[in-house]
Amino acid sequence: MKPQILLILIICLFTLNTCSSSGLVDIIPVDQIVPVTEVEKVQVSVYYESLCPYCENFIVNYLIDVFTEGIDAIADVKLFPYGNAKVNSNGNITCQHGENECLLNTIESCAINTWPDVHDHFPFVFCVERYLYFDKFDKWESCFEELSLDPTPVKECYNSGYGNQLELQYADVTNSLKPPKKYVPWVVVGKNHLYEDYIYIVNKICSVYKGPTLPKACLRCLASPENHVGDSVDKVIPLNPVTYPEDSSNPMLSKFRSTLMSLMFKRNMVA
Image 1: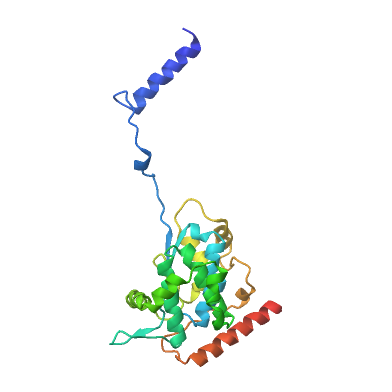
Image 2: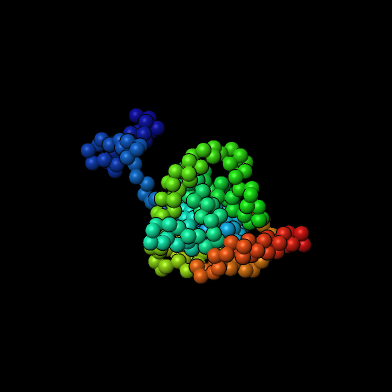
């Protein structure tokens, strides 16, 4: 017998003896194969409210990095647009920054319900909050056209009162937080409450993730924890203020505060 044939026979016999005691190989269907290790995404919860200048700043300048820098590959982000609002004994919701906040909180709740995938509804939320960030409240409806989104289901959700029911659900979730929410934005990464360090959301997601492969942005962040990803020059402002529930609910004061922050950021952009 030729040496090559003998070698092949030896390999075959060895394989049968070591892989199956019966000499038969069981074929497992592909859909029944379970990975040896399956790493779950990091759960990220963002509790915020519209017309809060600090929430706008967080969404526009920091939360956006999760999606533009590939961090969403390892993070599951959930948005809760309710914030510091309150539900009275009659089930009516009073918002911290007045009726316009209630309107936009509900609109964003309807958008989340209409497009459940965060990659579908976050662009709309970002667009709305960006207009508010630059003090352009009257422009938010243009986000539908800019993003080629049909406004009908969102407006029907709002007009039918279903959006209000969604807000009441968000109220229950927000008010059940442990530890209780102190202010907004209130950001939770995994089981970690970021408190006033919410601007380091990308760093925290990267440090909590247990998977074998990190996005490139994580490598940059973890190499220097004080660094941020993204290009916004607004990030040079070393402030991460928050809005407490007891802050004034006067919408004019909120508008003034938001305008002041916008002017500060624009000045930095020109400088």
